[in-house]
Every structure is written in structure tokens, then in C-alpha cells.
Image 1: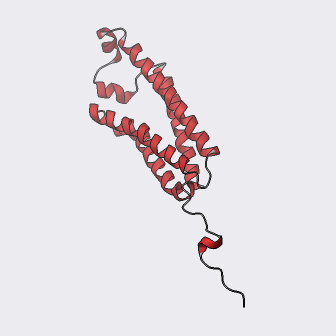
Image 2: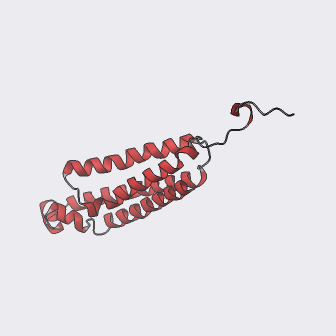
Image 3: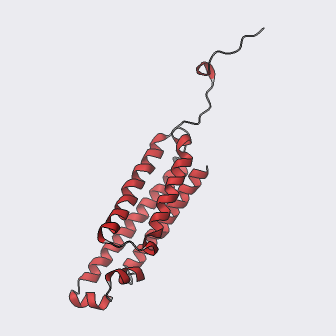
Length: 159
């Protein structure tokens, strides 16, 4: 159950992150680490092309919405799909973590936007997801089920 609770917390963190990203995308567009990475001010970007900031804003809002959707799926799967031996739950969460967190880390590294302050939620999500999947693996994949009956070996003879 600890693994389940940790995964629900990961989903809640994703939900908060998605709401935050959508809100920023629909309002100020940039956070401080963005401005530091770009080494410019928003008014310079607007002067270069008046469509640039609204374009970035729509991507931010869309990404935030996608993160909210993924968060809802993680939370619901972790609350109602978490049952002993349901290995598909473990594999689904594992593969979605790889396909969700992986590109986030890769693209930030590829463009050189590696601010720990900016990426700490991603790193925290990866770490907590790994802990959850490690703790829950035996339970979800059915490896910790007690064995009963003839497969345990012969029963003792009665005297």
C-alpha cells in the first residue's frame, strides 16, 4: 500500500504541475527560469514577432492540459486498478512514466535548459515513481502471493 500511496502522490503532483503550467501559459507565459535561460525579456520577443509569445502560451496551456489528463489517469488507475496480480497496472504505469518523463529530460538536455530549479518536479516525479513501482512490483505483478494447496508440496501424513 505504500507504493500505491506514493503513486497517488505522484499523480497529485502531476495534477498540481499541470494546473500551474496551464495557468502560467494562459497568463504570464514565462517563469523566471525561462527568462534566465532565454537571456532576454518578453518585450524583446514580442518585438521580434508579435505572434511568438501567444504561440508559446498556447503550447504551455496545451501541455498543462495534457499533464492534467495524464495525472487524472494515474490517480484513477492507482486508486481503483491497484489489485494483487494486476501486472498490467504495473506495466502501464512503468511505460507511461518512461514515455512521459523520458522526453522531458531528453529535450531539456538537448537544448541545454538544465536548470535544477526548473527540472526538480520532473526529477522528483521520476524518483517517486521509481520508488512506487519498486515497492508495488511484487504485489501488482503477483510475486508476493502466498501459495496454498498442492503446489506447495506434499501435505504431511496423518498418523
